Amino acid sequence: MGHDVSCVIPRWGRTFANALRRIGPLSEEAEDVERIVSIVSGGKREAASDPAEAWRRLRKKGCPYLSIAPDRKRSERLYRPGFLGMDLTINGIRLRVEGDEPHNGSSLIKLDEADFTVVGLDELLALNHRSLANPGRVTKWGLYNYQLDRDADLRIAGSANLKAHNSSVGREITDFVGFFLISGSEVDGFTTDWRHITAHRTPVYAKGRYEELVKSVLPGLNTVPAADVEEAVLGRRAAVGVEIVQSGSTVKARGLRVFGAPLFLSESLFVANYRRYTTNSKLAKLLELLDPLGYFDSRRIDHYTDWFIALERNLGDSWVRRPEPDTLFCSMQEMSNGLRPYRLRTRRWMASDRYKRDEAELLVTRSLERIRRTYAARTGLSEANAPRREASAEKNDSQGGNS
Image (cartoon, rainbow, N blue to C red):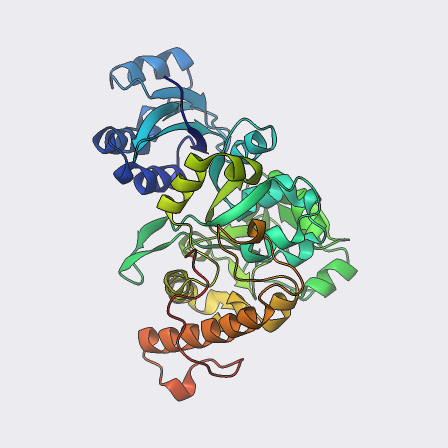
């Protein structure tokens, strides 16, 4: 029996586990899904340098939905159990879910071999920034579709709203990360301003898979590839690098500092083949069931605020020139660059210069006000002392979601 819709997710890691736990409960195979997540999540313990030994350990699990693959992101490159694929049934829709490298989901959509994927904005930009009119303007995923000038079938449908428990705020929050400038505790001889760094050709360490992306965002930057950016920064005097930071625990534990606002915010997204979406009613129905969150969805705004508070608490003084939470989320200038309320059933998921501009201005204002109020309430600040960068407005309840 064939499938109606195909999806690609990472074969292991946090996004893999959260994606399957997001999709699995909707299916008739929910128990199998949870067992798969449990086995793969413990896969590091079953890893081996010999593939035959790794296969022997995996066979003991008796799970046909798994395979072994090299973990290329780790220097040992051990073979470990990973998700191979399985068929799920959701409301009568036959969904084929397959595991692969994170960036390969987007590649398979471009090759017309997958319908949608779950991938972070960082991985999507690393693969597809050449298809954007101005990569430097895509600091948030809400600006991605608007900047496309080729390969237009690869579109963001919305936030996948993948959540995990965060001990700093004591609740589950969306998996936000920031792509930050970092340095050691002692930095002499230069400033950590991007313009100064670029003008003085200061070496900036970056993971190889992100090096070209960083150069496209900041032309003229003197990037140096590094397998471990944090180690490279620590090992050299007055060194800086760009690194993904989620909770801040690792960078703080290693005595590193984080500077200013990130180059971009990332989170797990549903990215789909738009042409197939318009011709395959079952793909359209499945995406509707998965309920991607719009950029201005109130649930997403609250989770963003929680993430900012958690990062702020963890980093403390290690976050130098920390921005206010509202200014990091969005601004009126970004609305002018294309940040719009778009929904699955609206205008091919892309903005235009005139499309819903009035609604966008209202949503930006309401979102910033909601962030300020939520931040104040959860950090014990009074309204008068809460960060303020835009005029106040009414509460944003549901506008901007994928209704």
